[in-house]
Image (cartoon, rainbow, N blue to C red; front, side, top):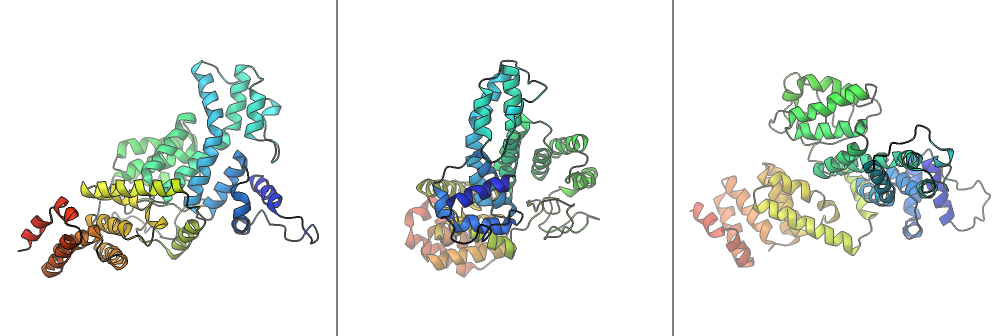
Length: 411
């Protein structure tokens, strides 16, 4: 139904057909074909008003096709449209109102033209219990939107934003299975083992048939060992190999990522060719607005601050959100290279820093991080050359990062 609603908008954007009515109709069961049509009509769709239902369908379409950056933004727009109804439902609960047992018939979605906005208008005319029941029903889709936005954040390397989204879902629906799974998994990866296990235990209790349940059921008894910090790529003793292409996931389990080696949420810092292609497509189809650029600038500055404080994982988690949007920016590459160096990812650090210096041979952070990297590798001559090049290129940056002291260590 949601795809049909989206198709209705697409068809409305097309000029009057000169071909027979059946020609060129998009197959709503083919998400790739539908997404291709969305991309083709992007300019016409950009300024066209979109309902909550259309944005939900569009976000799901991006998500299902691995275009998570666009999914994050589209789901955000849907959340904004749902916010007034959520605020009204919250206000009713604070007043002690309990939802009515039966859902009024006029509070049910009906086709592409009768959705959240229309139901909100109807709810205003009802007594408080029926109004709350009406709003709760209309907002069930909003829970799925927020949950999938959380998943999208996780899949682009931002677990903290993912955690925040899923916690908001659980505030409204404490037993929502998808959010129980993700909150538990992220907490486990963050070494909050006892707290993470509580969420997974709750998932098994309230949703034993969830597609997540087999993975949770298998992992819970050995969670301490599975999520124990260990060297990159090292699995716990007796742990089955985790296929990078998701072959070992249960039926219906969407592809997921994660940073903890050997965990059920495992992913590699090295993206697959398909992930690279998906990310490139997402970047190409993301409108570069002034607000977006301002947000990217703020994220980059935040990542650099984390680097200077030695918070390398925090820096990496922030910069991974900027890198796809600015693949040929020397400053961004330099910061990511520094994060990789601090995390011990030597080969990736050298490759990324070299890329930054190819883009800008005088990029100060790239010179600094390359000097640090070469010093760690025992190449004193290369480290000295990089530090001296930094002093010549940006004396202020060099002073701020105590390069004189770094040079003194090498002599």
